Amino acid sequence: MIDVLVPVLGRPVYDMLRTLEDATTTPFQAYLICSPRDSQTRGCQNSGYTTWVVPWEPGRADFAKKINWAFARTKGEWVFQGADDIRFSSGWDVEALRAAERYGASVIGTNDLHNPSVKRRIHSTHTLFRRSYIEEQGGTFDGEGAVFSETYDHQFVDNELIELAKSRGQWAFAERSVVEHLHPVWGLAEWDPTYEKAFRETAGDTALFASRLRLLKR
Image (cartoon, rainbow, N blue to C red; front, side, top):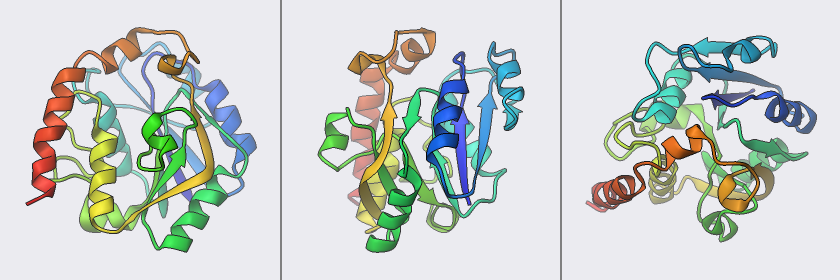
C-alpha cells in the first residue's frame, strides 16, 4: 500500500488525481491536506479521497508541516510525497518499488523530467519512502520534523531528506518512475500566490540548508 500525501493550497487537484488513478497499479490511498478556509477544500472533499483540514494557517513551513502531520495519521508501508502540480506516468509506482528492492533502499527518487539535479539522478522533487525508515531513523538532520524539517520556510526540505538518506546508504533513483513536475520555472504552469509563497525565502532557505548540512558532516 502506498499512501500518497498531497498538501493543497489554492490549487485544484482533479488533474493530478486523474493521472494518479490512471497510472498506478499498486494499491494506494490519496490524502488531501488542506488549510482552513482554502478555496479548494470543497473540491477535495468531492474527489472521493480522504480530505483533512489542518488546524493552522498556511504560514511558514506549511508544506513540511502538512506532510509530517499526515504521515503521523496514516499507516501505509510506503509513503509518497506528492503535490497538486504533478503528473503521474504509467508504471511510476512499479518502477519506484522495483528500485527499492534492487538497491535495498528506503528513499526512492522519482523522475520529474525537468529539474537539473533530478536529471543528474542526484535529487528528487517528489519522493517515495518507506514508513519504517522514517519511524526508526527519521528524515531530518536533527529531528526537526518526522519526514521534513520544519525549520525552512519551504525550499530544501527535500534536499535534507535525500542527503541524509544518501549518508545512510538508503537512497536510490528510479529513472523510469516518471512523476512530472508541472512547474512555472519550466514553463508548464502560471505563477500564482502559492508559487510566490514558496519562493519568498529562497535566500534564507538556501543559507539555512548550507548551515544545517554541517550537522550531517559531524
